[in-house]
Amino acid sequence: MVRRVIVMTHPSPSAPGQEIARAGSQHSLTGPAENFTGRVRVDPVWPATEIFNTSGGLVTFEPGARSAWHTHPAGQRLVVRSGLGLTQEWGKPVQEIRPGDVVWCPPGVKHWHGAAPFTALVHLAVTGTVNGRNVDWMEKVSDEQYNQR
Ligand code: MN
Image 1 (cartoon, rainbow, N blue to C red):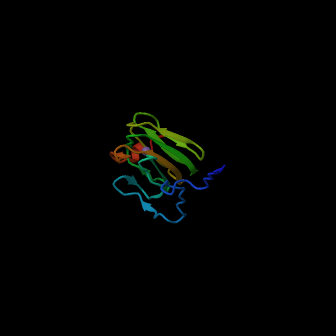
Image 2: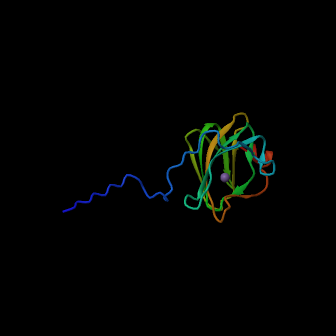
Image 3: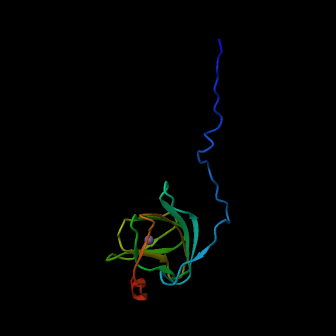
């Protein structure tokens, strides 16, 4: 009698394995002037892919800096990491956001986010993608809108 023992110590060689994106392997980007007011840096964290269709980016706003008004076709979560921020949904009051706060921006809801006037903001933006698109930009946030609190 022959006993056959099959020991599988490795997955199929064609199965994709774990990946580690090393710190410093992605360039920092400047938030473009047509979509942001003030100095904004975007550090890409992970890209959206077909199987994980949501991107992550760490966004640093200098004091007074903010996004333009915009919507997200699949929504967005903002995780505040440091500083003090402001966000506003169209037609509603400006709200302060602080480290540890998590903001949900539903699909298609017009809004902006940025730093407080005298304090920088860092947030992680986790943004879903529809047909390769994750944001639709609109007009800039005026100083009057920004300072309405
Ligand atoms: Mn947004």
